[in-house]
Image (cartoon, rainbow, N blue to C red; front, top):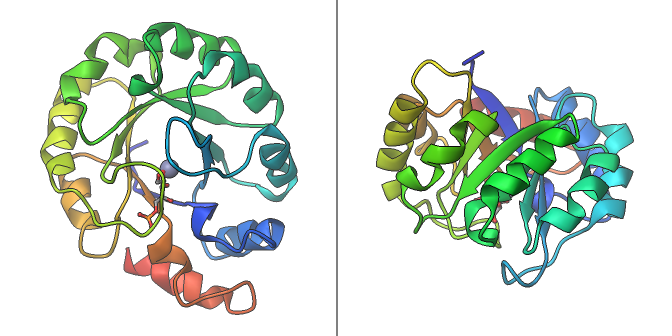
Length: 218
Ligand code: DX5
Ligand code: ZN
């Protein structure tokens, strides 16, 4: 299914109000909920771990997309699967054994994604595409919301869509997605758009219609 999906990143939500924020974005039409897990080691920022993800689970009615920006990864996969992730995406740069990591995610009976940092070429994921339900193309350096879109991700997306061919694999774009950049990556072959600041800006759980308008603008 190549329809365009919006996956708001709750990194830009009110951290004291995650349940209500998740319900608000879903009520306003979010297709997936994107959960950014950061460890203060693979990326220079910290968010939440398996207990946080488990607490979000009952509020998510759509699809919980868990983006792990952590290293090492493998020993935590079971915990994030048990916490209720529908998909776990791991970074190719997080360790020497992305193939094993993806096998371990699939062994949990959930969907698996591979993420590529802006400095990692498209070809880096060629040998693991058959283990993937999604390739995540980072269009900012991971760690923070609200950064500027890195345009080289557009050409990378085009290459990856070509490499995927007729396989059923999503391409997700994460970082700096706005009404201006979204059409560029969709034209290049992306079908899942993560957006943090562009969805949550100007709104709150008390004004969820702002989230809806922001999503429709993307
Ligand atoms: C960055 C995260 C993103 C981030 C995107 O490391 O992976 O999901 O929240 O935020 P925006 O949309 O504001 O660039
Ligand atoms: Zn993310």
